[in-house]
Image (cartoon, rainbow, N blue to C red):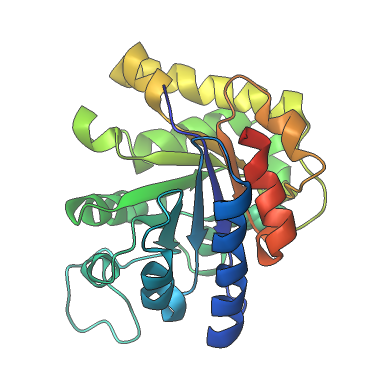
Length: 254
Ligand code: 13P
């Protein structure tokens, strides 16, 4: 059966010492309080990655990820970080296609397909984000938008590659707004995503794909969201910056 994952996305928050302090609280709480088979993933800024991986050694329910990686192997791309570098410090995941990167950094589905290839070539698991804007929801285009993001972003992969992908449905209108999708709205899209995966890769791969929900997820609304049959965990922004809140969301799967 598919893995349950709660992933924190720290975005551009926390200096080095603040990040290590928060992570230390998180790993201790996971050790003391998490009783299920779920995995807690922390996606930190690059600066923290190496130290967090070292701290997480011996904690098999905790993994570390980056929030981006460049599509090229290496080269003259001042200021960028390659997938090989991320892998070399021991991280396991890379968030790709977050709506903030699509919006502020012009990342397109075409570019994200290349990034996905590079990340997979280095044995990292992409947490690939998809989701519609408010305008796309209100104009009833959201199924088309999500399907296009899937087709252009990840459906070029072969079966073995796709099996490494974690998907995250993050409606843009729910990110950082305090307005979460209702559990019915989220379930409707997650079920749609799984049907599209089944049509492309078959039912078994669809059943084994972890699909996370993201957007104003917190300890209060997580139990109802995660109880939906096609929601396999969360991608958590604001609430992942507080150890108590983050662990309480992770513990929904205890
Ligand atoms: P919030 O949980 O702060 O809404 O952010 C969600 C998100 O963008 C996670 O990637």
